[in-house]
Length: 104
Image 1 (cartoon, rainbow, N blue to C red):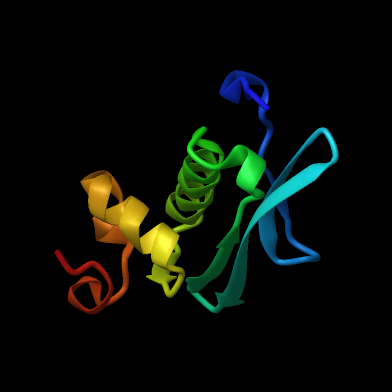
Image 2: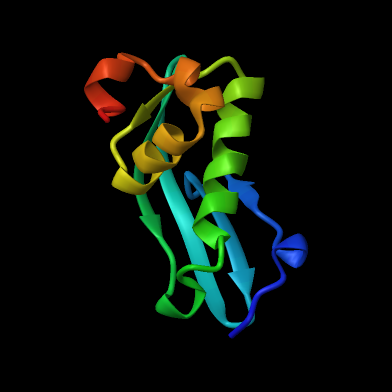
């Protein structure tokens, strides 16, 4: 299934504590735990049919922009989110204890 990322809408489902999108019958998500002035990203899940098409990256960017806009420190327990931050240094200042989570 080819995806047009411009048409993929990411929403923050605060009740479920996740950033999510639905394309056709498929869901992708990044789970998080709000913790005071921190946000802990715990898990990213993308159906195999979406892999390699930028869906997870778009969700990560949306989630990190949310953290930035809300002055939240990021704790990236999720390997995908940690990897995304490593590749996008503009988000590294958001990371709480960056040396622990954003290793080269």
